[in-house]
Image (cartoon, rainbow, N blue to C red):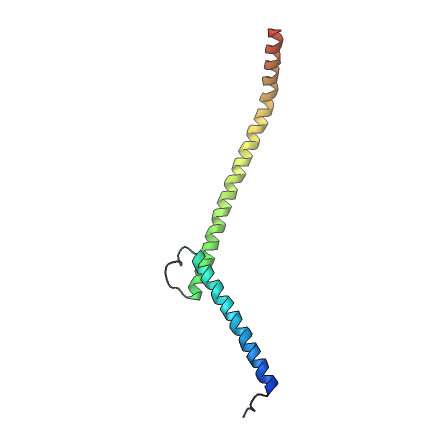
Length: 106
């Protein structure tokens, strides 16, 4: 048989219960916030496991889209670099033509 809690033990237990309740409330608040961020969960009632599964799927989808976008960015940067290098060969000729035309008009 358990002895009834002493005054100090009861206070500790109450404190622990209050802390645990606050922790659970913070988790629940964040689950609602996360649910509102997910396109497939916004307008329907879903449980926590579904919210987490949808969050994982959504993040994976966003990561894949980011990889594709970064690949396009690298391609564009490479193309810009190639154009810049081609332009380096053209620029001196343009400058020379302008200088020649300035000499001809003097």
